[in-house]
Length: 311
Image (cartoon, rainbow, N blue to C red; front, side, top):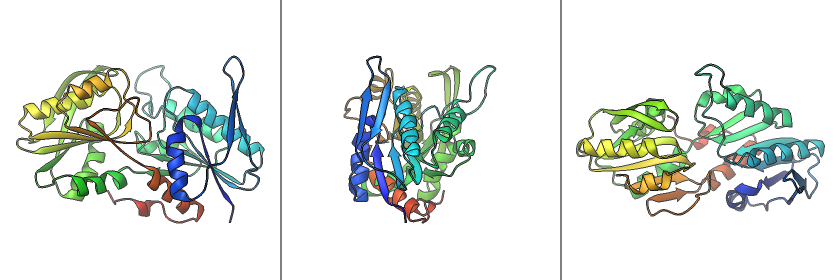
């Protein structure tokens, strides 16, 4: 069996250290050099010839994170790595997964093409914005699900006697239904209409929330406009409390202010993206143990789906 070597991109070091600790092997050494104009040259400081190489790097903004990952893949391929897996906890540009208006890119497909062209043999990621993005790749994709992290947290820390789950938009219904089915609880839907990206024109709640402790479920929280608006409307409909589970804390623009000023009691996120600053309302759960287990299962040719709830 090929030797396993784990490497981290610069801005995912905080997570990679924990993954390597759970896996039980130190991270490999990378030296990232830059020319005076900012051009990057990552150098792998140890042999990877014939090795099973894992590069851990989320591709959140800025785009340097993606470029660094592509260059690392190319470096390993040219150094005769045996098999290259890219571990991308947050897959950037996944929201542009279809041509919904004329003359726009399908950016998720472009990123898939770039990773393959660089030399990746496999991709491991978590909670893609649209699961069908897996079909953009012609290489294996391990799609990890945050429910394996959120469900144990809910069971241990929350009172489930009066819980109702909610999807903050129609696109998140399947995701929220996984939780409602697992806990045998009701599901409500917040139907929103946008005039343009990050700006909600209208929102209504479909279902009964009066007297309930509502838990909203989503994959990404960006400006937190949708979550905040949904929480406020749900509370206006008579809910007792509102929490939110969101895998990827992009948290751009006025997100922190929106959350602090909203009716949300607690926002529970994963560490696929580092927080820009702490917030009393935001609880971060680590994905490190799950990724470490998935990496080991991949290397040992064991099941990945066995790590998750059947939703």
